[in-house]
Image (cartoon, rainbow, N blue to C red; front, side, top):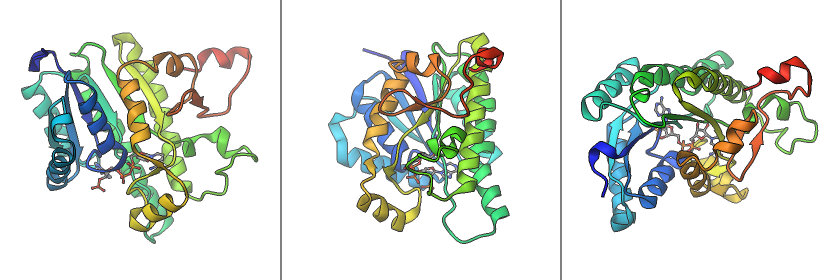
Length: 274
Ligand SMILES: NC(=O)c1ccc[n+]([C@@H]2O[C@H](COP(=O)([O-])OP(=O)(O)OC[C@H]3O[C@@H](n4cnc5c(N)ncnc54)[C@H](OP(=O)(O)O)[C@@H]3O)[C@@H](O)[C@H]2O)c1
């Protein structure tokens, strides 16, 4: 039986909803060996999510779940998260940077860019940087960035890409930047054994584009958020490492990778792709 000292401590941001919520449920049901930290930018939303998870899944939950307030755009909650992890567990094994937004209310392009980049890029960068010392204290440290193939420059440039007419320049820009963060961290963390994955969850029914968007996703045949959650359990357990590390790109939930930038075949540039 695992004790608090040998549990794998996993923090998932934006876990009160959608893919993050389903990943908490899938991980808890899969094994008693985790301690899951359900990150939410509002503590009340985190508590409410936990109550619902317990009501819906009760005895099937094997690993404990603790709600924790973390707004990725707030340096004070990021620092408080570090302090909490330090004093409670002295480490963090796995960080899943899942929180993300699409700005779907009318606003100026500049406001959209600022809001989108604050949450989807600046927050993840600062949160990971802040928590690196705690990741370094764990065995098998891992960071997973929940990205999107909408951030792939190769696919954006492909005239045959089926999603080419989907709007959202600001969101695409932010996920391209998040992919670069993942590439930089994947390279930078090698020296201390940190593994880094950029993950593409596919098109899912979630709250990402609000209630109307949720209905549109359901009608349009979007997938259940349980699908990427199942794939994320495999990433957490290292079952997808071979795919993720041998090729550069965004790990796709159903297997393989989506390119995150133009693929250069041969020549010296191929050698520096991570
Ligand atoms: N659904 C898809 O089709 C799809 C496709 C590709 C990629 N993704 C990515 O998947 C990730 C999860 O999104 P989702 O689809 O599950 O949407 P979702 O249901 O809207 O979940 C997003 C979560 O992020 C949280 N969040 C937003 N801003 C935050 C902040 N500043 N600090 C902390 N948490 C914050 C939200 O909290 P609130 O509840 O308080 O808003 C919510 O819990 C995102 O990174 C998204 O870009 C989704």
